[in-house]
Length: 186
Image (spheres, rainbow, N blue to C red):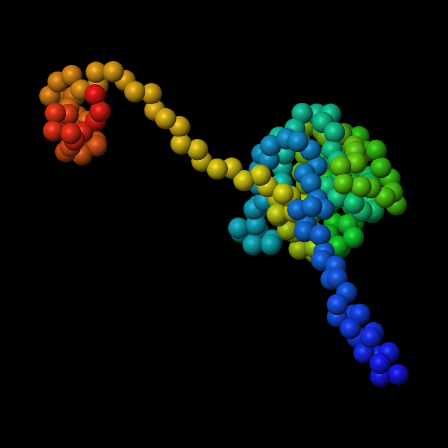
């Protein structure tokens, strides 16, 4: 009996641990358009701001589900069409206003699946419970790096004392000392 318990305990301890998939791998932006107005709750949860992302869209752009889930609402709110998806981790994403809706409440959707088309504006909001979160934190962001490029050399930059003095004020006293090895290359 003790041997059996030890074997079970060893099996549990040595079993591979299943790590949850990072959010960046489970969610993607609803469309390939730039964000026109980012998430902003700087004035508090009830103050002015933007509780989601507003995208620069053209009417009729295809909007997709940001992640797998179940459509819990697809219909009109104050005369505008919206779609809300409940995701397995408990997040709710709401997309709209929509010009057309291609899903119904109860439908299962997968990340990237078409849910409808946009009107002249498009907003994506994401909530955890009753708290809005920044949807951009769910998406894998391509990091941009600064890259220095060479500046083309202009011939005969240093023609006279006036230009040398001007450059010296901007780049330091060593400018124009070409014969002594200091300054700019000729």
